[in-house]
Amino acid sequence: MKKRKFEEQFFKALMILSTSLIVGSFFLIVGTVVNKGLPALDWDMITRTPDGGFYIGKEGGVLNAIIGSLYIAGGSSLLALLVSMPIVIYINIYLKKSSWLGSITRLSYDVLFGIPSIVYGAFGFTIMIWLGLKASLLGGIITVTLLVIPIMIRTMDEVMRTVPKELIDASLSLGATRLEASKVMLRQVTPGILTAILLSFGRAIGDAASVMFTAGFSDNIPTALGSPAPTLPLAIFFQLGSPIEEVQARAYASALLLTIIVLVISILARILSKRFSKNKI
View (cartoon, rainbow, N blue to C red):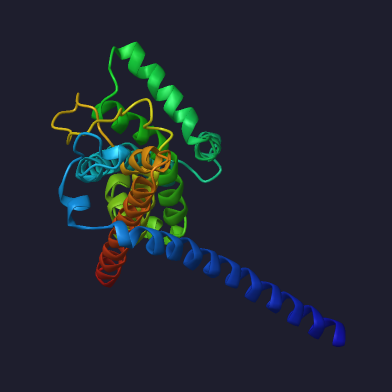
């Protein structure tokens, strides 16, 4: 009896310690970014593009990087959704759970999920050379789409597998086609799909390695798919590499902006998830 009580207290203490480390790390990271970035964050950082010499301490802002990041993250999340949704519906509705094709598909995107983003950057760069594309917004979107597709597929697949099989069987027994049954499933997992989009968007907007050689960088806001597309992670990287303290402070301000963007997207996703959850059948 004493041994069981000791084990319970030990693992309870271990869980509390683990939780404290995670929460403490979160507040330490956010606190560092806020402490170092907030003094350098002003209206010019948000509303202006870099002037000449911005990265050596002159005036300007990172509006170009903000817009470029939103373009790439938004475009890649949309393309990844269009590619991922049919795959997830097919392996969950049209294939049997014991299907070898479904097992291989899941194994494939599990492997792709763990591949470093720099590998996707190198692969995207190779594709761009083959297609004759230069570093551009289009190149960045294509590469980041490849990066986030495994994340989106894996997340949506896990959510769809929680839907009771009886719900699909009931739909089919009433004369519904598999496509109509898939609509019933999608209605049930709408909050999970929103979460998948959120995770993909957060990964896309915060990744630097995959866009370093594919999206390029510019002091201007991208106006076409063929234009170079600056991103906030690369802007932070370039500013942190400067020996000038003022520029390094701007890097933390840029990191704070990136954190705020992700936070706003997270809050909106939670609001939408709760709203759609109330409308489920």
